[in-house]
Length: 225
Picture 1 (cartoon, one colour):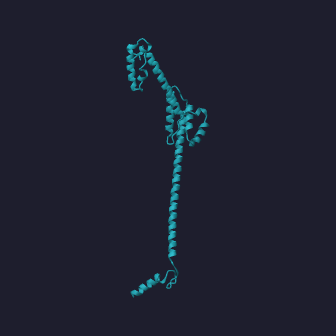
Picture 2: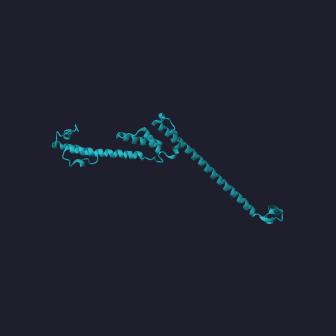
Picture 3: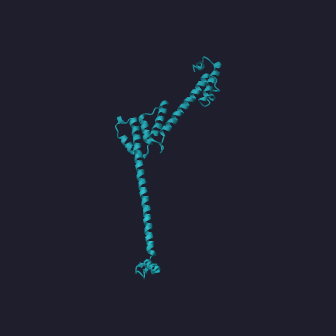
C-alpha cells in the first residue's frame, strides 16, 4: 500500500481525493481474484473497504483450511495408484496445511497413510508396529512401503505366470485327450465296419470272399495268364 501511495488513505491522513486511486488499484486485483471490487464499491471510507476485504479474505482462508483438512483425512488410495503417488499426494496436502498454519506431524501423516493401505499390507503394518520408536521415521516408513510394494508386485507376477502355465497345461491335456478319443473312435468304427463271419476263400474273419485280397490277387494273376 505504501508503494501504491494508498497507505495514508487507510490510516485516515488522506480521504476522498485518493479514494479513487484505491478503487483503481483494487480494479487491477480483479485479474487475480474474483470480482473484489463488487465487495467494496458501496463503501464510504478506505477503512470500511479495508475491514470488509480483510473479513472476506479471512473467511476464504478458514474455508480453504477446512477443505484441505477434509481432503487430507478423507483421502482413499486408488486401486491403480502407486505407493509413491499416494505418499506424494498426502505429503503435498500436509505441506499445504502447514503453510496455512495447520501443520500435520510426521506421526499423523504416517498414521493416515497406514489407514489408506489395502489389506495386502497387513504384514507391513504389523512389522512397522513392532519397530522401536527411534526407527519410526518418515524416511524409513516411506522407503519400507515402496520396498513392500515391489515385493507384492513380484509375488503377483509369479502367481500370474504359474496360473498361465497351469492353464496352458490343462488346455494341452484337453487337446491331446480329444485327439486320443478321436483315434479310439476311428479304430472302433473300423472294427464295427468289419463283416461278420469268415471269408470262404482264406478262412479269415472280418470280410467276405469278394473283398478278400488274396482271392482278388489270385484272380488278377489268372486273368493275366
